[in-house]
Length: 195
Length: 195
Image 1 (cartoon, rainbow over the protein chains, first blue to last red):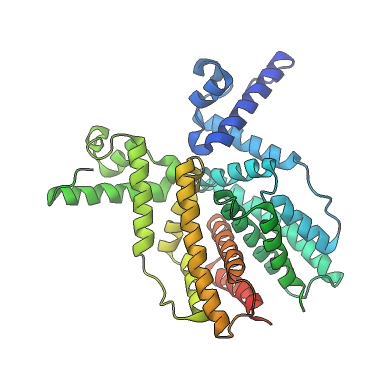
Image 2: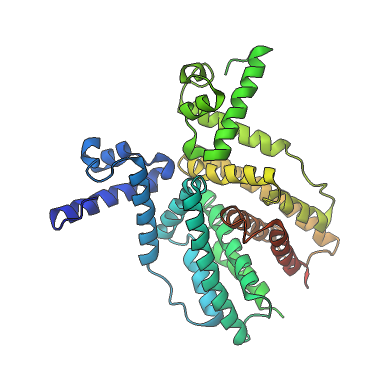
């Protein structure tokens, strides 16, 4: 996309908003230049000023997802077990915004798994999440808030639990309202507390 | 697809094989009439005898995924805790075939989440898995192999854990080789055993 100031910046934001709305409604499978143009009330021709093709549109959408995930509001983490719980609660689809973000993340897995470079980038991303969680687990163990055990392994399990809960809640929000999601997460955390 | 005998059946199987190979390599995001035709060494025109459009191709691919999931080899389930463990091991990507199947399942979530009817069908499918697991959990509790607690809730947690492990293992097979996946699953099951 052209990097000039003023009007162009505003237009760029409009385009990004339209991309996000298409992702929210149709996922990555429905992300096409035509769909974004329709959402923007513009011609596909205009969009080619921003994206030379489907691949650039896809790259922009993934950047947007990263950016929105990075800047979204988070719970105050705190140290130890409270920090572990806050990090995992932040992942769950407990608010409308978090439902949208998760729905787009899950939708991006198809694209990511089909592309070796992207797949490796996702592996690194999830690896960093596990490391952050592992540090918090180790801190909670030092505070005697969690039982002993390899923190990396405990983090792998806790993140697996949370990601799977995301998937189930997205498909079946009636069976997994926010209250149930939090109960299930706390069930899991309780098993890590007991000696 | 036309339902006649002989040559047509054989051709139909060839088409299905080609659809499966496209899904394996490119996921649902890469599933197009053109890609299937190329895989089959045929023209896109020929394929229109089998699928009137993208939507019919998609429906066939989802049927194929269901069918292959339904007929794949499974561990002897046995009763009680052994049955719980066998059901969850059957979900994990522990073999090449299970990696392929899971990769296509995860890839299908984008398509499924974008379509309300399909999304509801997936919710029912996962609901049935949870019920089956819940019955096995209750059986294991009656045998005093698992600690007491709402079997439905334990099943929800165990299935969440397993689905999330699938996702992590697909993106990072080096961090989650089969041995590690089984260790993590057994960690989770052990927390359900302890009184």
